[in-house]
Length: 339
Ligand code: AGP
Image (cartoon, rainbow, N blue to C red; front, side, top):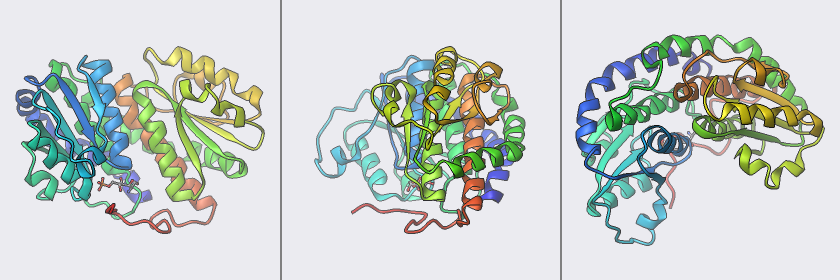
């Protein structure tokens, strides 16, 4: 996992080189459609949540997450003739996602596969395949396949609008900067190790999916129950559990419309007694966090990629501190088939 985290600057650069030339093809597929539906499981589902925010918040195109059981168990017939369905699976062989994509085509959708595996079942049946260039990923926890999937899904923005996410060409350097934050991540891991009462990971908007993904990384590598929640939801009940035995990890972009409210929310946390760990954000947000794992300064959309790297570093360091092997978490496999 540690090696694959470190490989991300090159993985992101290769993925951009491979996929930018395909943006016109995606535009031709996507622009005649009025809405987007995204399907994935686990980490790929978190990349799908990111795609939803890219489509709706940045491109102004309605988007939603698919419920695969509608296809696999209910066999519902929907009219998807005005829909682009984006199926995400790093392996390209998670059965229910392949099946959902097949169902979507039968329902009239245009289909885009986002996968790290060329020639996989998902690519074979899609109208267009965005194959990320992460290289083989051996550790069970997805790291470089997640960030490269974010890059792939982020290209929905130029495909739908002609506008690139701010800072796209500088992204590999920014990812390298994030990879270099191991020292601060180690301090964050020590704080989390001492808080055994539970951890909540929170954010909002374009970095909300990274809160979900950081929560997933902490669960599978550190074997602790963690909740990933929008801070808006956190305030509607779950906030009551926060006390001196717990920790909140705040995932934030360095700019954007969500940052001021997220900063005010973060300022309210120390009074609960919870440890407050910051991933990304600006100086004002970082001032309320201890420790603050500072991320590179980047446009909001691509902050998701670099804050994801910070979360991976913290999870990997915490697993090491707990004496766990993050590469092979108990009871998990690289590809999971749901019966
Ligand atoms: C995440 O670290 C896991 N490896 C898991 O959630 C994974 O993303 C999920 O099982 C889906 O796999 P896929 O992307 O190959 O479809």
